[in-house]
Length: 171
Image (tube, rainbow, N blue to C red; front, side, top):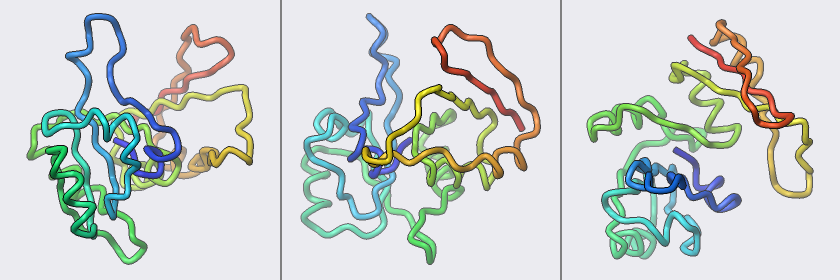
């Protein structure tokens, strides 16, 4: 799951790229309030009714039409007074569709929504020794306080990712 902001900035694939394992690619879920996803993005170009769900609230008819031509599954969902989706409501909708595991690769805002509502069973924090530049529209992870309040069990994982560190948080 990502937001349209992540889709438009990073153009992720959200698929399995291991040889002969592509059939295990997950269903891609994009939160896109007005269906303003970049039509040139990898996800939009490769989307169909079986591999992609866009969740929106208030899109104009021409944007809805673009998605329907691609036969992309659309789910309409309410937003709150801050123009944010109700993540718990969305999780219930996805559960009814058969989704039992969700991998969130969103930015700080989406991640913070999940953390505040304690929706993660496990949270993997990848820490790089590299600093993000302020000039490339990347926003640093600023949810450490929420993470530490809601997820007490912390484990450092030893993995061979160069200088990157991985910390696992559990509820």
